[in-house]
Image 1: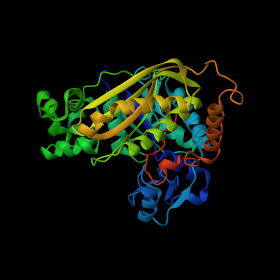
Image 2 (image 1 turned 135 degrees about the vertical axis):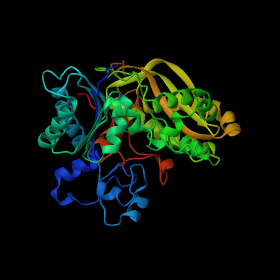
Image 3 (image 1 turned 90 degrees about the vertical axis):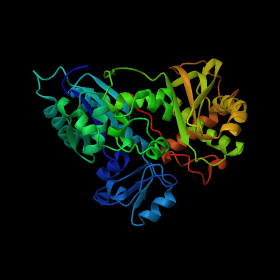
Length: 396
């Protein structure tokens, strides 16, 4: 790991909403909500009124009745993402995309040619603004973790450099939620023990953290609180899996409710697989129990698939097997993933002859691509908040 702050975390601000404001002058400086049933994105004017991604549309409109609600345009967001990633690649060849709107960049080898990292980050922000018309925030630090934290603190439309000599001075006063992996449940548990800041976590021994939040999580949080993150920026890595998950309340959940959530997650994952021309053989059910422990259940198929029905049938079988343990321990999170991914070149039957489910998948994909991800939903999901759409990182 370099001793200099050379890793950039570049994160587009309120990406979907910013694209809408860029493309329609009437929306500029106005509160904008993207998505009707569930908020996929909100402009900073809407966020100032309490609107957040993943919130139900009705609740968002109550908070901000003057907001302008627009349907998502996935093709426009993908085009904007490709243009931004082109700026990233022209800045440095070492680019690791995290999602459609954020990436890590390593500029450690560019000082003699281009200048210091802070100047490179400032020029990158200017290039994205001038060439793509979007605001972007950049954090610069010695580690990927701290660069991402810095960009979060600098938002919106900011630049923050954390020098190596000031890492812990910057990090330790921040709330515990800034640590990767600390969501509302873990944060509440830590706060019960008067652990409110990253510095409070850092002052605990690793064994104490393990006793509070479990083995893997405790070691993970202890390392991050001391800014120990040796991971380099990785280039050209294709996903080995695709998944989605949804957090649940702590009250009891009936099997029918869990099945409905699972169906929504499978719809999302299968559509992302088909959009990326990928398929996988292993279906994995992920669970987090009420006692904060996690478990996975997997099944490997004879051949790779991106078929919604096949994935859902397998996931339902795994869920049925896990129900006795869920009833005994409670569940606070459910997720599904398709692993062992390869390119989607599998032998397919002609859908209009042998496989009507493939034809249905294709029709649903076409409707959602044209009219937005919320244009179609399963009847069992009506009125339920299944979380925001997780967009696919396009091929850059």
